[in-house]
Length: 263
Image (cartoon, rainbow, N blue to C red; front, side, top):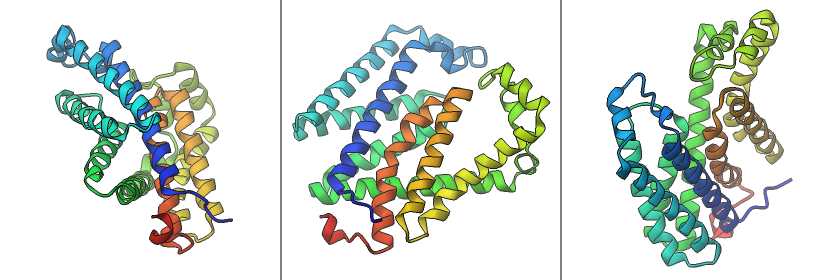
């Protein structure tokens, strides 16, 4: 089975997911002041009371909606303008936030910046560069995270999740208590997280496309579970934007897709 995915389709999927991710993230920033951990940084609490801060977020939300409409109706010139404004806005938000930033924020910003830079390149080449770049980045991210967990004694021992799920930020007391009472299940869950993350870069180097499909499905389910159990919905809404790029890159590396075919 070969991957039958065009650059245009991959780019379209990635852009839509990126816009949805940006919209949801900005909506959360504008409506949930607690996201800034006010009890730790009082100065941030003051910032959240500024009306211009909320207005900025609402303007950014409007730009995302406009970009979505322009892209859907093929108004590429206006889409690019609004997309560049969104990128600048998200970069500003990322810069002024001193806490509550994670890998999803970094991946989103990286995608926005890379897609914006690729506007300088001819359309199809720019699309290809965009999706392949973020695809390569997510492979590095999963490999790094998986290896770091593998090298961690706590993750290997498998007694870390109950502690994480008992914290203020990610706490679900019922599940934390359940895992403490069932250490075998906790250990299995910990090892599953390690295996799932490492599985993606490992399967990438296997020529048969079925393996990379399976690994991406597994990591998607992992993100879904962390969204449900830990409230990490940002990862679920952001990281899948890179998956079309992973599939395209897999085809190029293993020779069943060529740049000439794609362009």
